[in-house]
Image (cartoon, rainbow, N blue to C red):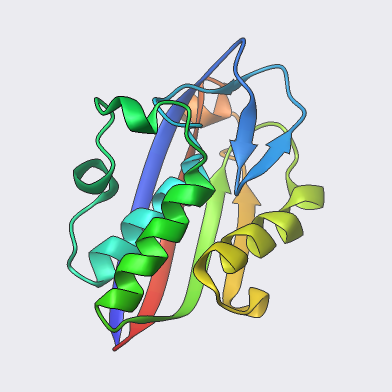
Length: 156
């Protein structure tokens, strides 16, 4: 068994779509980044790569590589899943959390979990997606950005 932890953060800006867990969420701002800036999927990918001691997403999908400009993070998650399979790892479970003051994410969480499970070829009941606020404190609480954390368990 191997455990990994991931963390990601992105700034919220106007004129960008908000994508979390591969779901487009109606909101007046979106996350700034080279790809679709899906902070949730980025944290999950880093946790998976870390658990397998395979580096991080910046190493595998550098933000200065034009082929990743605007790419869906769900597609990148599929690539991470393929890499894990090639190395003999199986995802046992994922526990993740999005930290954001707004918007409310409860209605979108089941689809986020489904998207990530499907990308990795695992049952949806192996993927937990939670959300919390920081009670108005810090950059997530003021609405300047969003963060996400993930913990994963792999089996070899």
